[in-house]
Image (cartoon, rainbow, N blue to C red; front, side, top):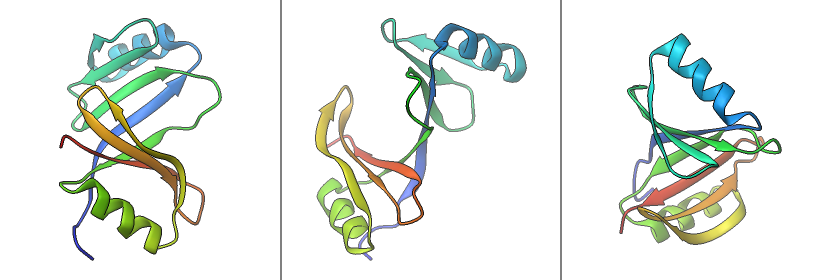
Length: 111
């Protein structure tokens, strides 16, 4: 294993983005930064997170890597099914996969 990957971000999905944001704010005291009509970045939750307006996906667990290609090779060698190849997004690059039990996960890097 080349790198120990750590959970860095959890992306929640909700078809009712404003209601979910309001619940998280009231129930947990979290703050938010709006990134357009379909995404909120969560602040103050103890780990990074966001809410995406989407009714079709489950939460996405995102790990951080120093070397994205090495992490890609590492998870594919361990049996991951790649669901999104490496792509650019604001802040870096990432890919997404399902582990053998079906959990949706991703890995990102800022370089």
